[in-house]
Image (cartoon, rainbow, N blue to C red; front, top):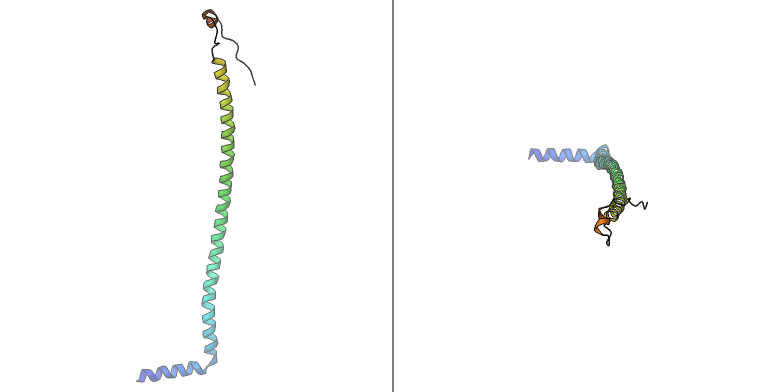
Length: 111
C-alpha cells in the first residue's frame, strides 16, 4: 500500500505545478516536430539525388536518340551504296559472249 500512496503523491505534485504541464506539452510537441523535421530533411536529400538521376537519364535518352538517328542515316547510305554496286555488277541482258569478255564498262557515277 505504500507504493500506491507514493504514486498518488507524485501525481498530486505534478498536477499542482503548472511548469510540468508546459514542459510535458512542449515535449509532446517537440518530439513529433523533430521527427517531421528529420524526415523532411531526408526527403530533400532524396529528392536532390532523384533529380540528379533524372538529369542523367535525360542525357542518356538524348544520346540514344542521336545514335539511332546516325544509325538510320548510315543505313540509308549503305543501302544506296549497295544498290549502286548491284547496278554496276549487273550483266547486260542481250550481250554476246564476245561482248561479255571485253573490258568492263566504267562504273556509273550517279551521285
